[in-house]
Image (cartoon, rainbow, N blue to C red; front, side, top):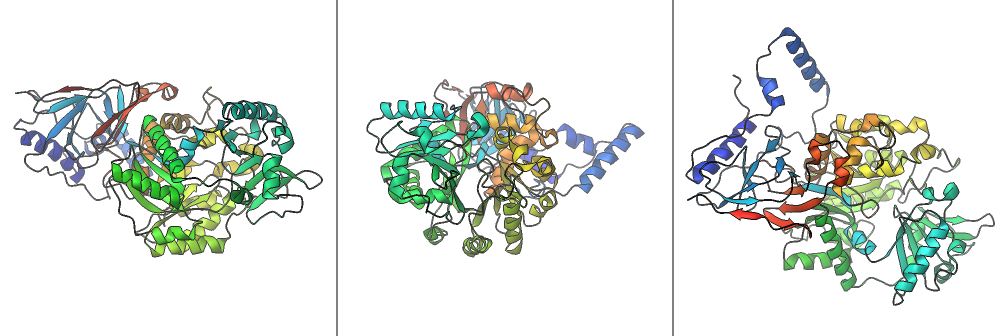
Length: 613
């Protein structure tokens, strides 16, 4: 029998120590998973040997994963004498641990760290035992790219996601304005002209008469707005107003503004809108964090938070733990953000990771910067929101403080520019990020691996955009679009999120999208560019281990490995044991973050049993 590897010993040792510290003999401890056993056991036939050699050859040909668990530092499994241990049972635990992929019991200590993975409770049982609700618990899910305040704001503003025409949008505004007479500005979000007749953008004329107050309606992707004549006039935007750098004012045939502003042109409105107060920030942040926890998330990476909002969030975290672990990337367009880097002390649930900047716009509003023209708008290649020299300046500023840079890059031109700059300024102690990495030239994909750039991607973007992606890009560019599998196979860390409120924050919906590349009706048959689908195991790792790696947390989170955080996301059904569509029905019933159980509003309290005498 082949000698077990160091990681096998770590898991078994943790179980033995946990049981020994309770005065109980070791019973069924964990063993290597089937793939590991297959790799270490003698083969039975020449055919099996040939198959094994072929598998090993394929693995040798593939670059090692940037975050290969066998190369990362081991958490220390030793448990101090007298440590209080609690066993958690109830759901099936998918651990994310290579050698023990599944457990029926997780033993955690009073500091919220996993100490053992067991197949069953020992008899007699030395542990206080908590029976969690639900049927499935997975290693805690992160959302690697979202906007907490945006989620909270969306719950107060007009939801335009169901509009299917400009007329629908106007009716929704009229109803919302009538129901909220105290508002000084009517705001909303979610319209998508690709769902409208002839895919025409709405105009201020379409909205005339809906309200006499300033009206600001943000496109679903956050990269375009439509405003009414009241706000256009207040901002002084006329036919004579030039397009700002990195922005675009849509105009009619006579050159007059239609009311749609894209990317940096939106900034023309800022001086004419009320500034958010500290109370506003706290209300939006609080609502957004609760929504994330209720969705089954244990951690979130907030992209582009303002300094004002971050200071409020610090105050909130000082009062007590936030509902989810929160990793913040400040708005990197603000010079003052770089002065803050290095001056913030992290708490158990709040850490400042770096800055987020924008290289280009979004594909839906044709703002993503492409190497060649848009297939459905010849002569237009999109927008660079920052010139390469500006991007480089921000990278150097953040790196000088030892912090990450997360760069929004959607088009293949923007991605190439950013990759080249991150290669030039790469540091092995800093893990920079491409946010979205939505369209890449195929020849650029392998370039992320060397400088250890995280591909921070959103599965539901692919299934939302697939209706028009080929129209924007043409067939020749599709192999590099939403290419999760190609990037995964290159060894790059692929971290998944939602970009909420652009997409729904529920990770279960992202899991479904990643393994099917289909909409909720199961279309298209076989999936959109189906070769880019991931397996369920890969998808869960992208939402947990890879996301944890992106925020330097791989020694502590991303798997239920002894010594690491006891963070789990719990669902009411075992969707992992059912066809993929089950993830659309899976309801989060609670989370555990560092051993602290938080139940969803409709969940019942867990049963707690004392240790055996």
